[in-house]
Image 1 (cartoon, rainbow, N blue to C red):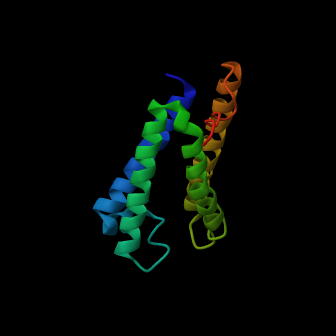
Image 2: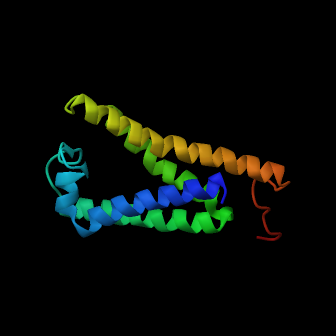
Length: 146
């Protein structure tokens, strides 16, 4: 299994875990994410069940898309770029809202959210190199007359 596929499966697993938890148990996710004693979501009150279930569904959708990309690398670029459209603003928001968190949570928050941006960028670079060394075009050719 290649680094690209492993990275896609890793992102899919993380999104499935986060999304499943938020969708199935939104109050538990709100009160306990990411781990006991570290309540990152609860630091942004108030609790909103609708918003958390939507967030969970969004993350599960990304998990499915990332899993499809891991099995069909033709999808990898589009899905990774789509994921970055979510991950970059998410990181930027949290970078501006760290002051109310203990230092250990600030570090954990920045590291995990930065990884959610850096890993997809690295996977895009790996995919570009894979395509180049395989002699594949940078983008799929357009069908004639379409």
